[in-house]
Length: 142
Image (tube, rainbow, N blue to C red; front, side, top):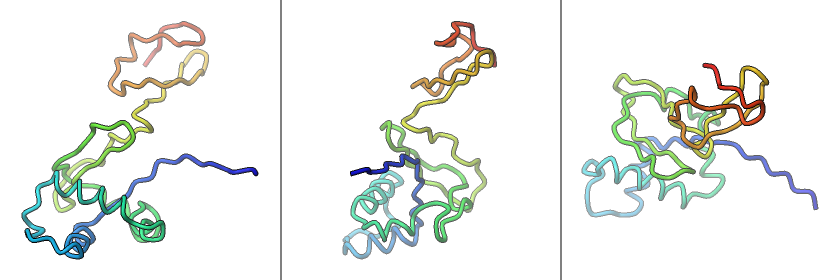
């Protein structure tokens, strides 16, 4: 059997209206408006975990009707505590810059300008000026 595995980073967008609908389906006693940003992130992750493949299609960025503008705005809260996922609450009615925090497994790709060797570092905030290329052992240049 020849299986093909494609690893790709996917951004899921859960709109406020979708989260509100999911919350109401669960017949919760507290009002949706009273949820904290942390509770909204947990609700979205619960919704992600409990959605079928066909239901998930409506949440995939650039697939169907989810557009980049739904991911831009002021970041109100974020959870960057796990290597495999980054979760944000964004207020799209306020100005803000697009997220730059998403890295595959929190790795940053570095390419040596001298020998073109590519490698990855786990610390995405690493000072690359102190690193040497693992292939040619030359200091990296910015």
